[in-house]
Amino acid sequence: MFIPFFLKLKEASIPVTLREFLALLEGMEAGLADFDTEAFYFLARTALVKDERHIDRFDRIFSEIFGGLETVTGADGVETVPIPEEWLRRLAEKHLSEEDKKLVEALGGFDKLMETLRQRLSEQKGRHQGGSKWIGTAGTSPFGAYGYNPEGIRIGQDTSRHRRAVKVWDKREFRNLDDGVELGTRNIKVALRRLRRFIREGAADEFDLAGTIRSTAEHGYLDVKTRPERRNTVKLLMLFDIGGSMDDHIHTVEELFSAARSEFRHMDYFYFHNCPYERVWKDNRRRHSEVMATEDVIRIYGPDYRLIFVGDASMSPYEITHPGGSVEHWNTEAGAVWIDRLTGHFRKSLWLNPLQEDRWGYTTSVSLIRRLMGDRMFPLTLGGLETAARELSR
Image 1 (cartoon, rainbow, N blue to C red):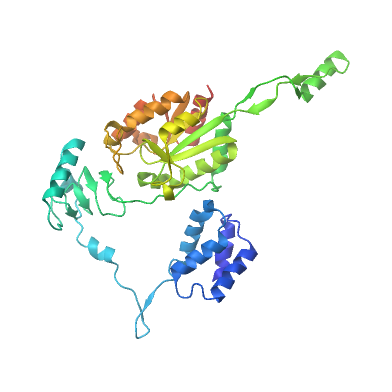
Image 2 (cartoon, rainbow, N blue to C red; image 1 turned 180 degrees about the horizontal axis):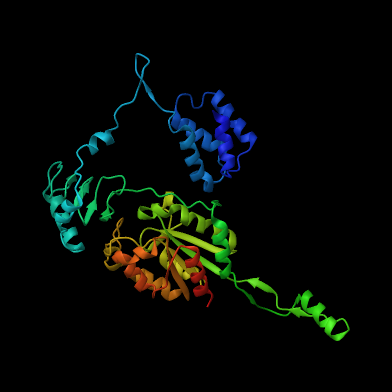
């Protein structure tokens, strides 16, 4: 059972060694994780993973190999599995046809939505299900979970279903992008190399072999030539939208991230969700506690950095236009303000969008972001990368 697990980890380029594998087996023989899947997971991760960058790949392989390990056995020896509470809860979900959905009306604007929520919180005394007014489940109310409304606030639901929420009042976990993804990155690297423009700086102190040979042949005597030393001076700062609708594009963005990390000596990155606001972060596991102020990003990184936003720009328009419009927290300034500050500071900036270009016109927020970027939005395709590279190299 454990040997295929070990081999799968190596196939995924996680640097595990035989010594670490033997340490895992010793831990199992010592009884550190008997009949406990969670204890075995932490034992295996401690023994085999030495760099937190590899935890996401480890988690995927662990789930693939041991996902069905934990079961419940009845007293008569017959394996029994309880019906998950999630299944029972969703039996009450309201499934609406497209015609039914068109009949459900939004409250009419961000301010109206927030004011109505305050009223509901002060008036509501108990649990509600299947209604159109109160905070509840499986209805058409703008507030709650597992129902439908064209514009509402999601409360108490683990994942998005219709992607209509203006705000989400739950703690959500996003995973970091994997910088070790190799499949498909070769062509992306070729496109990104257009950004690696070498400019000549400093004194003419580098020996020019080809120029010396050519000049010597032309003049009949040794004519040593030098040239300015070639240095890669491209500095790249990338801001990645993570979570929510971006989960649909995670593999494509990981390929871009991996290629950029390997191609650029001066490259740094941060994460944001939907729209950049007053803070960004490096680690999605600690995005609520370990953040950097966006003003500090502007102060630390000079205007000579090329700034690239990567995101599908698909969100509630209020996130861009309104203070407090962020889906996850109460932002004191609108997202548009921060985009203007960032693009005003960095001399070269653009937005890469993994959403198919022919769908941009159907989403209001994409049009808003595109306008804020001065139409410098490009599709995350090889052709789009080529065009973006030319834009940043001007």
